[in-house]
Image (cartoon, rainbow, N blue to C red):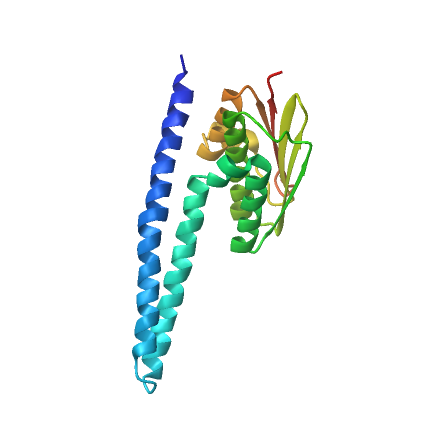
Length: 214
């Protein structure tokens, strides 16, 4: 029988998947239609209406950027690439997307990760990586984040390292920070361990080590 934490995370993933599909299939498509309609209207206006054309173009650009952000959110909520391409390719793609969107270098490397991993292990590692990278980019005040995946037949190790502002892990965890607590829960539920090494103005290293069944 599944424990309550496992059931909660499973329900959470199901809800994330539903929202992701709605964002991509409904809202995203509607935003794309609005953008095309605005472009068509701009082309149909008489040439002397330069100011109106410029304003419509500005709205169109804003709408297109919003559609792209919605698509990125959809991908973060439900990492379809994880299912079809595997952990290494999905993680590398995520790091490239964050680098481009946030103008921060997210350097990804991998070594020896098995081509096939249990689905729950791959999802746990991906979610921990996702949360750790997002926190580093948004709060650490850095221009570079290093992400490493290393594997062997017996385990997989994820490390996310930044040289940013840092924090007091004990104080943050005692405050029940949802992101960090969620990373701990996900790692523990697949039999792994999560370590958080951080210090004010001295950067942060988050490492998840998950064993693989023989």
